[in-house]
Image 1 (cartoon, helix red, strand yellow):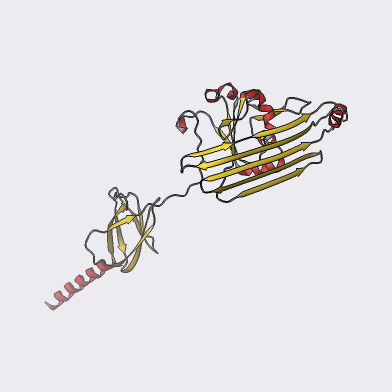
Image 2: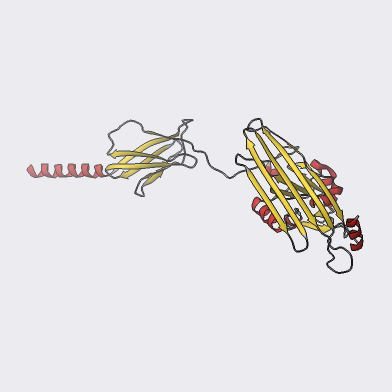
Length: 340
């Protein structure tokens, strides 16, 4: 009789020891704001590889948790990570509910521009190419006088000389003449199609933030001037910190470029101002007494005033003024004109 009791007690205590070494944990994970269950929340025992995920009801079950104080880590995309410490075996017998608080995701800046119609992105047949701020800065360094070099480096765009006398150029997209390309600034037409060639030479790039290019017919929105495509010049807007830029450039062929840009803001009111002066002396590179590079003097002044009514409603008023004197052709005629 004594032997039977001893064996029974040994088996009983051995079973208790095994059960104490293997603890379980059950909880429900919910959204702190909506109180809705969260599916797929990852739960792990800190410092171990033991883990589980919540089911469709937000229920999570962990097994084989060691005795003592353990920290459980609850993580979910778009929510703050929560750490809870418990002492195992648990003395609590009630239902455990873990609430996760949503956390905002920090995304890159997205700039949206609207036109005269509303379309879903996947339904828009055209593709917009963007010359970013880094490329704009590089273009300013290479050719600070105007935007011709910057646009000419984009595939599908050709900068073509149309006059040997005045040095005028035109912008060709997909091989079509420049009069079929609409030039915009901040979404508003700058010039008519027949003057778009000369306008490229009159736009200093110092106040540009980026350039958007649409290749292909957009005549539905902008008329016959946009059959070949659209070039939209996005200018800088004032920020809380004042910005000042100044550029001076002198080439061995006698070209001088001086540009300055300044912006500032106080409360809801802001402003930007761009001033530029460009000069070029006539040059006969080939020695045939005909100016390969015409002589010109150009001054540009472009002030803008901004007012923010609220986060979604803004008003800006701007003025773009250009004064230019350009002459080319026979070198003697140019010299006589300058003397007079």
